[in-house]
Length: 194
Image (cartoon, rainbow, N blue to C red; front, side, top):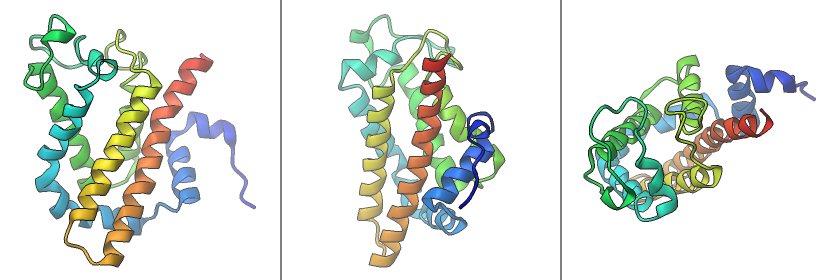
């Protein structure tokens, strides 16, 4: 039986990542499968980003979080939810972020910097980072993660892979997204406990 320092899980993101990866079975082979999928996913990223934002902008509960000024955005913001469109400068800014997120998943090394990045993806949606006025509720983050999972699973299913490659790639992304989901949820647990 392995001994896990549960307090360290809350304080050390690298330790947390290693525990999650070990427990779930997210291995260097999974990272290789994700990287190998880059030629299939890369060209489709703009389409996947557009589909994701079409869905996010289709519900007031998710769209409302794009009205306040986003951290790092210096352009014109929409005056109200009614003024928000897929072509709004702030939405284009956010789409660029999601594009870079997908590119990071398929192109970066899964090293300590990547672990910090995955953690920041969760933290930036809370008042603990970015714009202090933006607090995306956990349910909205869960629907986003579920949507991203579905978008990626569809992309893998449609790719010209043999059955074994397809299944291994689906499993690799599934494990990664569960790790990402934990790095989102942990910041909500900290917010509640704080």
